[in-house]
Every structure is written in structure tokens, then in C-alpha cells.
Amino acid sequence: MFIELDLQSEVPIYKQLADQLIEGIASGKLSSGQPLPSVRTLAADLGINLHTVNKAYQALKQEGFLEIHRKQGVIVQPGSLPSADEAFRERLRRDLRPLAAESAARGMSEDELQELLLSLYRQIQNPSSQGGTSP
Amino acid sequence: MFIELDLQSEVPIYKQLADQLIEGIASGKLSSGQPLPSVRTLAADLGINLHTVNKAYQALKQEGFLEIHRKQGVIVQPGSLPSADEAFRERLRRDLRPLAAESAARGMSEDELQELLLSLYRQIQNPSSQGGTSP
Image (cartoon, rainbow over all chains, first blue to last red):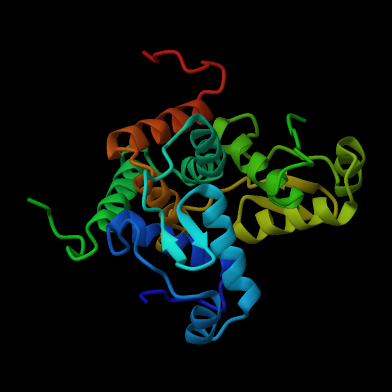
């Protein structure tokens, strides 16, 4: 898989893994219904603890991005992906707020901040075009 | 002070405190050189541990948002605030990335996401106008 973990980061490993799986779904690298490695296999591949992989998978199952079946194993949500509902927007606002505040305190303009977010969003949705001007 | 902590939140208390102090600086509620309560006073006011307040103050000192003096005590940076330098932008990109990815995976458009960020940014810089159209 395409997962790259930074063991030095202050971001917990299970969260890095969950974030990258969600990014894989956002970019289309992971498609609807696609099987993912078992907890055991992915833990061995990444050289991390079984519990860490399990925690990431369970969190994504909880959110509705994955399904975990006894026979099929772990698959990307084959039905509708979870939506940007009010609960998500509330969490998004809460998580964005300190980033917006620190950007403002450091004198970053709203245009600069929006541009940075936009370029990230496009890079995630279209990872092959490395920051070039899109058609 | 204007600090409101959510003891149920998964966000560590020291980070909530540091975030709200930075937001206070961004909004102008806290002005350059303004004295802040001592660690002991703020801990007592908020009903939290001395070490938690100290951790927040030290983190903000480290970043250059506060100064801590033996005699004057804790004051908001009286000189230039830290800038949105490349190290900050790097951290900002890292922290925004999973939020942008999950927004995309949940089908939120780039316009919606930008609008949400913009409204937060403006609300932070101008907390008195509660989401009204600014002039």
C-alpha cells in the first residue's frame, strides 16, 4: 500500500494511518468495495503493532469509511460514503479554528490561507499533478 | 479572562488554553505587552493544574507569542509577533491536510470548504460581529 508513517511525528500512528486511508479514498486510490490488507498483514508490512492498525480500522468503520466482515475481511465502504453532515462540519470547525486563529495571529491574510487550503485540496483529489496549474 | 475549557473534549487542556490565548491575540482581545495572570492565578481561576497552565505558557513562549519575566510576569509579546514563516506553513499544511482529505472524501466541494474556513477566520478576527455580512 501507499501508507507512509512518520514515527518521529507527534501525530499518533493510528491517526496517521486512518488519515492516509481517508486520503486514499478522497483521491480515488482506494475505490468503493476494494479489499484492504488484514490487520495482521498491514501491521507486518508497516512494522507496527496489531492494535494500532486495529484502532485505525475500527475508527474508520465507526465513521462509515470501511466495513469489516468476518469472511470478506476489511473493505472500503461499498455503498455511499459518509456525508459532510452537521456533526462533521461541527468537528471540522472545531479543528480548523486554532489553525485559522494562529494564521491570523501570524499575519497571514485570508487570501493566503484560502489559497494554501485550496492547493492542498486539489493536490489530494488529483495527486498525480504535483501542484501544476490544472486545466 | 475569556478562556472556556471543555473538560470532556479529546483536545488536551493545555492545548485548548494555548489555542484560546492565540485566538485572543488574533482577535485583539489580548494586546501587545498586556500582562497575563500568573500560572498560579490562572490555574486557580480555571480550576486546572498548575502544570497544565505552565505547559501552555511555555509552548507560547517557545513560539514567540508570550514573554515570561521574573519581575513583570507573563506578558503578551510586546515586539513583533511571530510570522507565518515556512516552518509554520509546513506545520499548517500538515495539520490542514487530513481535514481537507476528509472533507473531500465526504463530498464537500472546495468552495464549501473555503467558505467555512473564511467564515471562521473572519469570526476570529472580528468576534463581535456574529457571522453578519461585514462591510
